Length: 368
Image (cartoon, rainbow, N blue to C red):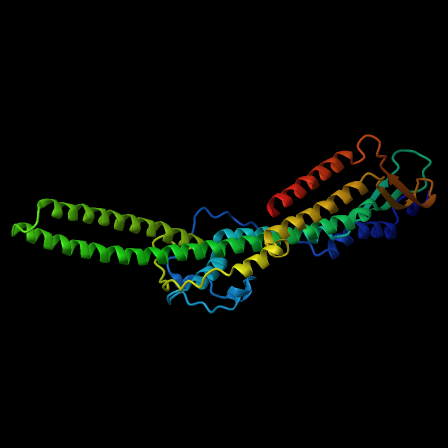
C-alpha cells in the first residue's frame, strides 16, 4: 500500500486549518483588560475643578452659557454646571453607552460554523487512505429575525437617550430650585438679622424706660420673647441653608462644605400663561419622558415582531467536503431546521404582547 495515500493530504489539512483559523485572524479580536472597582468616593473640594464646557449640553438655553465657577453664579449657570457634573448623570450616560453597544451587537451578522474531523485507520484494515470531513454551516434563521432585532435595539437606544435627556431636564430643574431656595434663604436671613437688630434696640429702650419707671415690666418681657423667637428663626434658616447647599453640592459632585458664590435672585417676570397653554397642547411631542415611553413602545413592537418570526422553523444550510478510508471523495450540502412543535416561541410571544400592553398603559397614565 502506498504510504502517500495513508495520510491526510497536506493541502487539504492546511485548507481545513485555514477555515478554522481565518475568522480569528481577520475579526480584530478584542483584548480583556481588568478594571478594579474603586472603593472610595471622590468629591471636589474646589469649584474650579468643575467641568465648564457647556457646548455639549442638549438643552439649548444652557448650551450657550459661559461658565466661571469662581464668579457669582446665576440660576442658569448653576443648572448648566449640574448637568455637566452630576454623578448620577454620569451613570445614566453609561447606560446610554450600554444601549449603543447593544444596538451595535444587534446589527452584526451571525458567524458561520465550521468543522473538521480526521479518521486514521488503525490495525490491519483494507483502508487505502485517511478519512477526513470538512463542513461549513450558516444559520439563516438569525438572518430572518435580524431586521426586527436591529429595529428593537435602535428604538431602545432612542428610549435610553431620551430618558437621559429627561434626567438632565430634571437635574437642571433641581439645581435651579436649590439655587432659588439658597438665594431666598440668604435674603430671609438678612431680613431676620435686621429685624433682630431692631427688636434688640427696642428692648434696650424698653429696659431703659423700665429703669426710669416709664414702662411696665411686661413690655420688656414681650421684647425678650420676640428676640428669642427671632434667634430661633435665624438658627432654623441657617440649618435650612446648610441642607440646601449640601443638596446643590451633591448635584455638582462637590463636598458638602464647599460654598458657591451665588448671584441675587432675578426679578420675577411673572408666569407666561399663554406659552404654558401652547406647550401643554403639544406636550407629547416635547416632553422627553413621553418621547422615551413612545420609543420604548416602538422597541417592544419590534420585539413582538421578532418573537412572531421565531415561531417559524429556523433553517441552517451547510456545505461539506469529505473523503472516506477507501479514498472516495465527496462534496455535498445539508439543511437543518428545528420543528416548532412544543415551544414554537409561544411563550416569548405571550410575554412580548403583555409587555407591549403594559407600556401602552404606562404611556397613557403618564400623558394624563
